[in-house]
Length: 377
Image 1: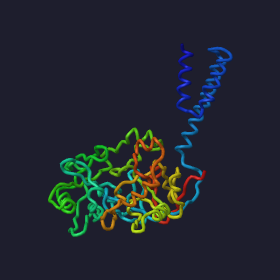
Image 2: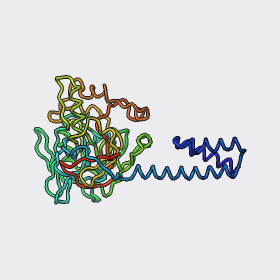
Image 3: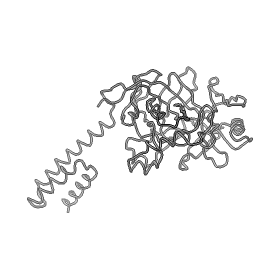
Image 4: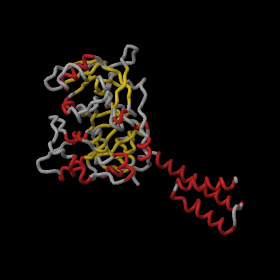
């Protein structure tokens, strides 16, 4: 019975690694057929092949998770953008620090602007709100204002200074709901900020709240199992604070330029419609789809964890907050950038892809003009 159980385990192990099925299962089974069952030599053969399987698995895992030794340059960083409030205006930067929670501004003061650390949510339902529903949110800007505050501004609204919440017992900690009713913690930024947002977005005195993430005390999100099963390099730590998915998104100018050639003559687009953190100049169109490892400058290293699927937000002009009436460029993207992998389609649906989501492997400071390197295979 013990030998039969060993055989069953061998078969199950081989099923999990189809590339070694012939060596681990077929050869020993042929041996058994020829010389009888069980046999000490038979099990010796199985033991050797299993040892080879384990060695192969460890080497593959090491190669998957190890930073490449050889790199090739594919372009340079042409734009660098942080989005302090989810679904609001971005800020163009010359340099930024790359942390596990996303990019953040480089400054001498204690307060940094960090990517999607603020979130707008409904005060009754606690559901997050975005420019997909309220396009004018794209015109809300935020800037640092001293060592402990930020300033909000929007068309036809007075500027508003709000104190950034700190770790304190007086903070109003609550939850808001993002995609698929996932609950995330946040600290409410107070009634003044809520009133300002509600007046601008809803044209009423209340209805919206502004939340902020306290990185030192609040838990990180956990990725859905179906996501990690489909995209094998995706890890929990790759999730952004309040971003739709990861903390970093990269696009290339050449891919956007190629999309322009496919659009109707009356449609114009700019890179900011797609809200990348990193924009790369000098690479080939859609070459980024196949990049596995990416290095920006000398120290910041990332892994490509999944394609970036696109939604209606790409159809809204970030300078005017006006949606393109025929849903371009999303409509054109759906014509040639649909996912084809059945497993990905099951997770992502029919949304087209443009750009890639990144997971941080090595932190570092990046600057506009930095060279972009990818794994040299």
